[in-house]
Length: 431
Image 1 (cartoon, rainbow, N blue to C red):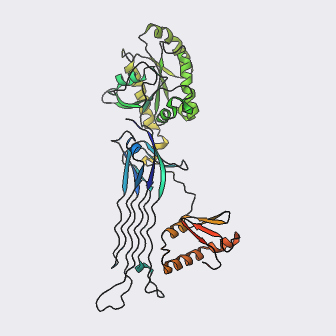
Image 2: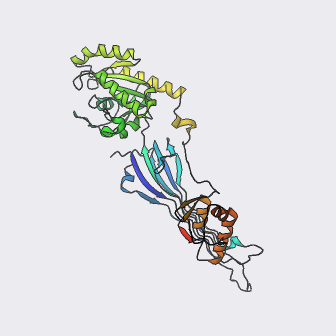
Image 3: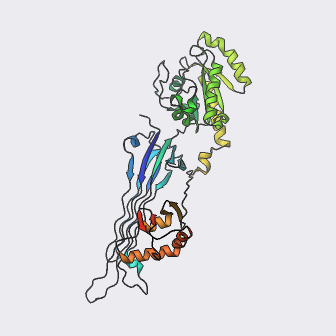
């Protein structure tokens, strides 16, 4: 079963907690701190695999969590890092942030991968907090929580050529006779409910990949007839073969059909009209198609299109069509490259509204909410059940200038301050 879009939740593994421990050895009555660091949590990696062609597995399981790092131990024993969780997807999958819509990565070739959710850093053990004035620290850091987010996996087939046209014009039949593909074929609208791929052999081992894009209809760009699910697969193709029913049995005017489809392409993404488009007038073996062909050829040629009379069922004109399309594909491969394949690297666009080292304060009634990667991470890694750990937290907050900023915003004693999941009442010199 073909499945080309899914929304899943991913959570990187939490870091392991640092340990509080002291040396306990014979003849060493005042052994120093020896608590080791926690291990790092596992990342969640999205990886492209050419052996896959559907996102169906992610339909039934929507939540993925990487393992957390091991906690630190005594004798400066560092916890083991957790292994990464690799989620494999078909080549051509776009990874998006579900909340912002930002593209995290565009995985266009086998082996491309991106860290979609990072695991948390392991907490420092108490051995890391010694200083000339603090020789026996009795606190350690908690592990950093792993990143969590909802993402959308969206598959866009990677094919050299896309077959487009209204339902029942013969696209599936054309794909089946030009390739070894076995699409479902019948005489009713929307027989093809999923894109089909096949390899078209030309001459002397030459070939190209062709996709049958399911029947588009008027309003497809707005989602009619599953339009959005179909149109996205047109975007990666280099050449389009626009199949028309030349017989006029399915439609009164094939030219009007031609304009309907091109208008849908334009409304969905105007750049699609810049792709080379070859017109295949199908069912030329029928008398009515022979009568209509001259007018269709004249009108479409005047519009700048190359037109081929073919019959998918009778296998007429297919060799000429294949050779012509192959030459266009090869010319594009030699002289141009699509943005998705630029430098043959994973295309990544990752945005963050929170800057490392910064903090933001917003007021919600009498509650002052403090946000920022550094300060939220500090809160998550602080053990608030330990007084020394709290004092360290207070010193860092003071150095960051948080109290000064709160006063500028008019905070008063008794107001609530919220950082991450922690809430506390504000009092003068609390920091």
